[in-house]
Amino acid sequence: QELRRELEALGHRFRTRSDTEVLVHGYEAWGERLPERLNGMFTFSIWDGRQRRLLLARDHIGIKPLYLYEDDQVVAWSSEIKAILQIPGVRAQLDPEGLVGFLRFGYVPAPRTMFRRIRKVEPATALMLGEGGQRTWRFWDVEYEPEEKPEAEWCEQLRALLEDAVRRQLMSDVPLGAFLSGGLDSSAIVSTMHRLGVGHIATYSIGFDGPDAFHSELDKADTIAQLFGTDHHQIRVRPNVADLFPQLVCQLDEPMTDTSFVVTYLVSRLARETVKVILSGVGGDELFAGYRRYWGPKLQRLYETVPAGARRRFVELAVRHLPVDRGSRLKLLFRYARGFLDNAALGEADRYQGYVGVFNGELEDVLTEEFAELAAQGGPDQVARYYREAPADDALNRMMYADLKTSLVDSLLAFTDKMSMTVSLEARVPLLDYRIVELAARIPPELKLHGFFGLKHVFKKALADRLPGAIIRQKKQGFGTPISRWFRDELRPLLLDMLAEERVRR
Image (tube, rainbow, N blue to C red; front, side, top):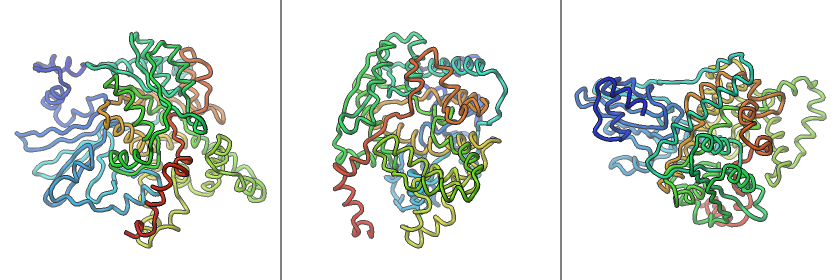
């Protein structure tokens, strides 16, 4: 709406209410600088018939996907890989580096995909293709330049910007609702919607019963729904994952080890019964330090104060004998401790890559010679390079920058978009308004990770008078899945079939 008014003031006249028409007029006014004028989620292509050139762009954070294929004869682009693979002459060939990236991190880091010649256009990137060749540039990036201000001032700025971001995302001509996991981020979105005077808020939650209740937060979601008087919809499921998994993996276009995509699909399907647009709390952890791995730099400094002999004799020996099964919160904590020790002797960037990796030292032991050589070369090294190149002076902000550029985009946002779009549901993410990202980058790291273990400190403070104390203080969980039990039960036949020696050799 703001761009429309600005363009009208410049003399442009509109025939429709379409966002697409705004893009066309915006290109007429600002040319290739159009992407930097936008705020929201987008990928677009504009063909300039006069100058015979094509402009492609992807939004600031990478909320919407964009893939590009190039060979000697064809240039093609799409929001889905499978659409590109339908083009005559385009062959589906495995990209070994993409596969190694998936095995190392549990997703395929950009710009690679699982297919040769098909690459991801990275966030905040624009391309101009014409008879003179191709030009690529980044039109935005976040700079981590902490400013010294009172905590209360940061909280006030954050609340004001969150309200403005949610207000912008509420613009819709169709029914709109919100995911509500019962966690801090989704509760913050619902609280803000209520504060903005949204008369009817539809919220959606999913959970599990019995032995899988560890993964459920339905009681917390109920608390928030009752507090703000939402029209709350929830389901308790035991899905037929043996049938569902192959279907959803096809929709993903590429493999991912974060099985939250199953729950995202199920709750999206529930929401689509009554709304067409959904607000999600994705992004808060990467902006305000919500992951336990962000304890790493402080733990590393503490660990290095212990004499080397004592480390080997007592600390490492004790930790390496801890159970690491995911069956309880305590064992999950033990697993983090083991993971920390496995990476403690590495340099900063490699240590970070170890924190976020699925397989690290074990990977080379199970690969063929060709793939082991790729892995030994570091590759892909896209994740560690973002840590090294981060525009930040401290380890915490470097970690968050790398997360913002890698796992957030190539895993979390990717499956959120694809699972919601599978049921024709548009998922919007107000916390990833680029202005909130810039604000978070200016907040000193000690206000994000307060003391030793105080994750998301400033975000919690900003919401302290808007949400119940139990929601503010709770441990992070979100839309999790009972994947360990699924692999032992429903998915076991599928797993054994996929890992059968004959199939692996093929």
